[in-house]
Image (cartoon, rainbow, N blue to C red):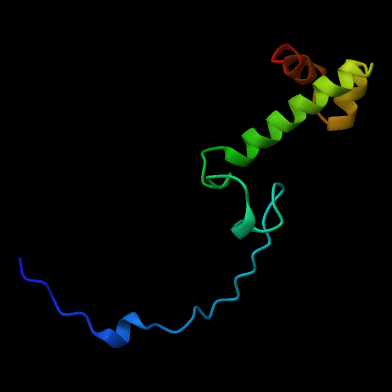
Amino acid sequence: MKLEKVDEKKLNLPLDRSDYRDEGCELSGSCLHCSLARCIHDEPWGKRRWRKRWRARKVCRLFAQGKRVKEMALLFGVSQRTVRRDLKGK
């Protein structure tokens, strides 16, 4: 196999001229300073899974403080069955 010589000028490319803004996500204000090893957007159903886990933890805390299932369902905009499912998973 023969290797091709690489042109040195092609390696010294100018800076990217795109208008990329590092706006982050719900977890971090900046992608470059995020504490996760892998971005939630790179995982299958990552953002959705993260939101469900966050809601389940919040539901458990509110239940321990005395909130009723019906109140939490209205608060989070989900069914009462979903709230019960979150409580069962604790």
